[in-house]
Length: 59
Image 1 (tube, rainbow, N blue to C red):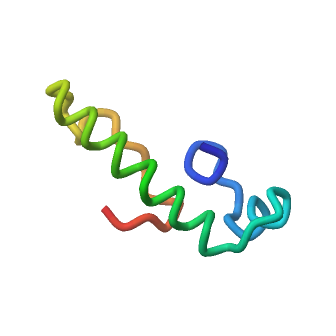
Image 2: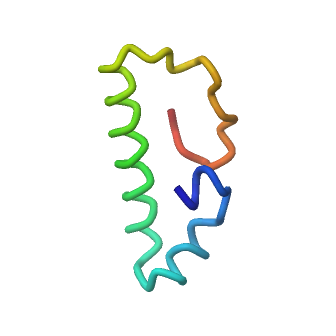
Image 3: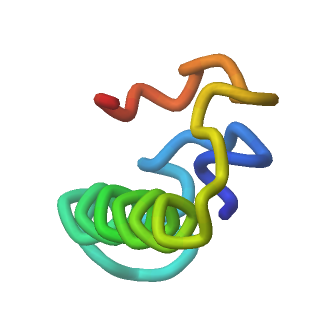
């Protein structure tokens, strides 16, 4: 949430949480993947209201 919605740098989040940067990257990736899967299952249109890809997450 911090990285994607609040546009906080992942390195900053990792330092604050006391975990490696790769852990934060993995958690963001897996969280977004799970959210997309859930939204697809609910029949949500992925393109409607899509936020700009400012977080550096591949789509």
